[in-house]
Length: 156
Image (tube, rainbow, N blue to C red; front, side):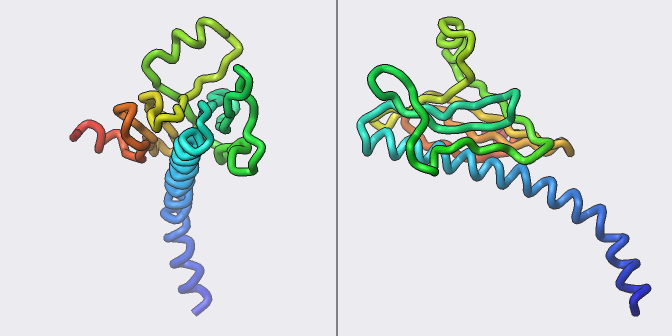
């Protein structure tokens, strides 16, 4: 009996390993999506501009709020830095982002959320080490971000 269980586990282990890595990407995408929803709701509720900042080199993201003309970290725990699990990468594609970054080369990529409920159009790509890729995307300033796979985007 023990030999049978060991054999089944040995056969299933590689599949479970791939499943866990795929879930890491999906879980990270869900966390980034939650940060976009928090930023949008806080911007509208507080009447302030919020940013989702993305550190592509450090594979992390966090929220900041504009206070007295400068962006500062949120005081609540919800806006704290979210570190992606090891092996995942993150990058941002947002029209117009390059212009703002040319003004301040030390600036990390960001997506901005406005008090009127709008936000920057952007696609945040999360990629795992096994080739699994998910996009957290917003195609128009008035819609909410959503998670899609690149194959789903091609069909739209």
